[in-house]
Amino acid sequence: MGRIFKLCYVIILNLMELNIRKTNSEDLKTLNKWWEAWPDWQAPAKDFLPETALIVEKNNKPIMCGFLYLTNSKAVLLEWIVSDPDYRESDRKEILEFLITGCEHFCKELGYKYVFSIGRNQKLIDTHEKLGWNVDKTPSHELVKTL
Image (cartoon, rainbow, N blue to C red; front, side):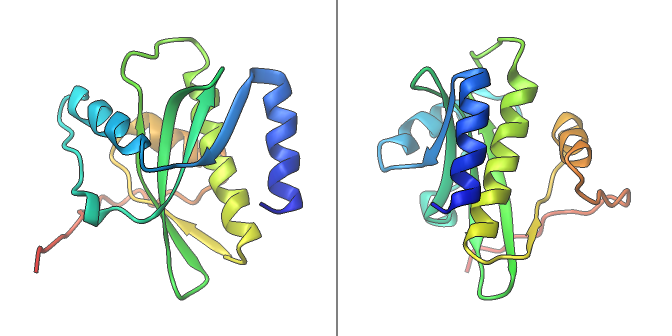
């Protein structure tokens, strides 16, 4: 990881005991349990997910994750943000901000210029807006076709 991402990691780690890292093969089991536990959510198929994802840990315990679809353009799609439904401490909002900001820095270090996301959860949308994202107020729908 580049210099900017490391700097962000160290500053926030000292304040909140957080770590952000790329996911590994063991993390998918945990993430699937999280998706299953959230009402109205279903875990995406493994082959639907990109290889690149970042997971936030607090005191070495996974708390929240986001997936990055890297493209051949200057844009990245940040999707499938999921969190541990049993984690109920008061810093959930800050952890979400840490995840999104960490993804932004990671993408910038890779040379990307834009990060795009789709959301329906109002708290997630509000957090993106707080972090300077442009939020289109016109509803849209995800369209997926299995070939």
